[in-house]
Image: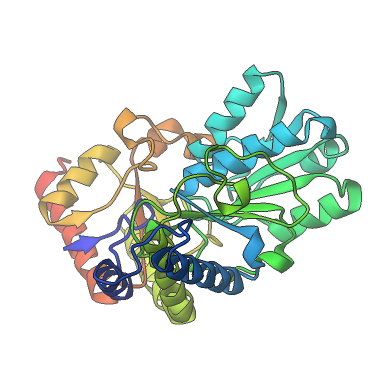
Length: 377
């Protein structure tokens, strides 16, 4: 099997599987909110895990909150910020290439009377910085994605933070870091953002756990109300198991990050060259994160190529997994200005540290076989 759909989800790594198995059999099953010794032990370990995750991400322990996923983190950050900071204004800046977890929230806020300014993006996937400068003066919040999940385009975050710091320091920044975590260096204390979201299952963790970062002195309302756990930010019984699994996945990803980046960059470069030689069109920007490669296959609709590859036990995707069942052309590629016919043939290959050059070579051989077998003319 060759698995090239790691932007959708990843296989849980050995460190996570071992941790989960061990903890399920341990005495750390108590409710961290209970006063007896089982609860106290669970609470102590939960606090240790939180502090560890915070340290790895360059944050403070009281700035880290565990959620169920990246989408919950995004909803909490965006909706929570505008709810608490109504006096800051009703103008929000974003782009139409964001993840649906952001776009759907912004659409809802527009219906509630908020003004959302969608900045144009270029063929390189980067937002027009001049448009940001023109609109930031009375803006209360900017929402951006660190790495685009369909193309790997990297946000020019330093430029955006510089513009904000120069023209409107009161404007907060929410950053979707789901695809950049474990692949780019993350130091929240130095990045200049007020809120950020992360997901465990994108870094060889398990589904059901995410993280929300909220910088101290950034006020937001909680999305989930109840018993007031996690300082009232996210009510519901804390899951030590899920939090610990995130810590294990994060630690393993950060430890392997530099070597993985080098390996995947070589794989990406090889596939770019070989696919282009065969008349296919590379849609990911030249400076994209190498863990994502979007390619339009000559003569094959996206879904057709996906199922052809599946016959050979190779797994890829067409658009984001959150939109794939709608069977639509990627809205991200269309926003880039890519022709609809080219975009309709687009397939996303997304890699992880587990992928190898041998797999890439086998992939190219398989593509050649598919063209020889199925393409007429």
